[in-house]
Amino acid sequence: MTQPPPSSLDTTAARNLTTTTKTPPQMQGISSRWLPRLLPRVNVRGGTYRVNRRLTHTPGNGRVEFVFSGSSVRVIPAQLTELPPLSGFPDGEELRALADRCEQREYAAGEDLAVAGAPVTEVLLIAHGKVRRLLPGPYEGTVELETLADGDHAGEGAMVGTDPGTWRAGLRAVTRCTVLALPLTAVRRVGEEFPALRAHLDAFTGRVLPRQNRRGEAEIELASGHHGEPELPGTFVDYDPAPREYELSVAQTVLRVHTRVADLYNEPMNQLREQIRLTVEALREREEHELVNNREFGLLHNADPRQRIHTRNGPPTPDDLDELISRRRGTHYLFAHPRAIAAIGRECTARGIHPEPTRVAGVTVRSWRGIPLLPCNKIPISGTNTTSVLAMRTGEDDQGVVGLWCEGIPDELEPSLNVRFMGIDDRAVMSYLISLYHSAAVLVPDALGILEDVEI
Image (cartoon, rainbow, N blue to C red; front, side, top):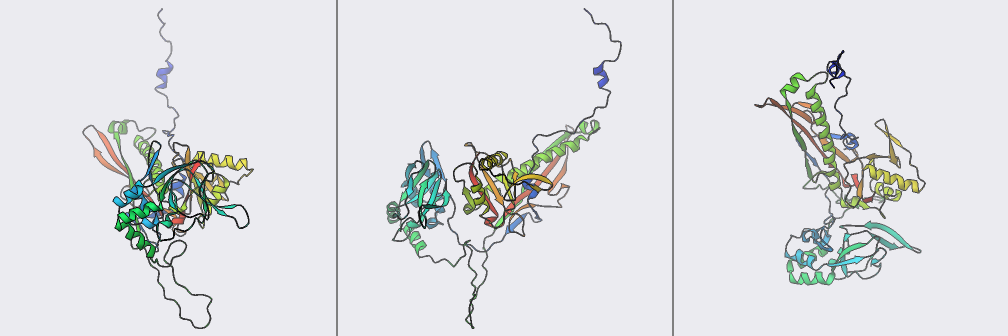
């Protein structure tokens, strides 16, 4: 049956002539980006930022890395230089011989790896799992000192000297653990086989380091509490001869817009402006990701090993947060993945604790001990459903963490971000180079701390 001809204008055709009310293009990938917003910025006009520090004497204080192959574990030979007695020793046959003599062991939760007061007969390298360091209490029971986990080690001091001594504190597995044990007898045999290794260990034994404070910095000699006219000590402040330098990193892309689009479809919204706006949002998101995860300057990779702690059991408890913020003289902010913040909330609720919220930049946020607890979805979650919590002090005046940028660059659209016209190709496509320069620096080690292995 044929349809009669329309007697009035069809709505589809009429809509083509109407003016719709529309929004600018929306983007789901925009997050709160608290980290780059709150980091105090330092304008790096030369492109490089040097962090001068006092001279420190802390050799070999890092963590050991391993290679996992099925159920077997092997220590990477070069990583043995993270043990203080082997610090500075060149990678070679000696380290490979020590790695070959490591014995793999498995411990169940609650088993003792070492007993306080027992002779030290081996160096323990923790490949996987959590171990609690315990000290006999002054009256009864035990005192928990710290939690060791993946990459930590114990007993390495017994590698040097003639008397290996005894375990000052016991070691007990909190979870199932995989440990590599390097017997001291094997160390001596390898030393006899390779005289260079023996000489290095003997030199470490006889090494006299300059006096240093508890942070490992060369001591400044002072006198106090004296009477009369004693001879006062002379001193000077020694500097690190090779300070860390941070070069500005760059995030870039080339935005392409056809001239026909820019000429004909600019009402009511400017197409080029909207394209640039959304591209800049994506670059800002990448900036925060790099500030957290970049191997060179990212915060997760630049925290001092002594400022990395592990949860006592798994979930992030109030005790763990207190331990984290106690590692520095002032904590300005806590950053965590939103799921980690939810896990912290569950643990607080389970204990009947309800922290008071606080306000940051006019926004009400969660807090712990009055310290803002801010979301950062760039902090990764591992395949085992664990993540990290960052605690930091910020600003140059407080010797904290600072963001680096370069203000006043050519064709600047925003501070440290510019848009440069690259021309029109033979397909009538305009190209714009959009660049964002950024980085971050940790001025002193205790400015940044990480709570690791947080189960969510």
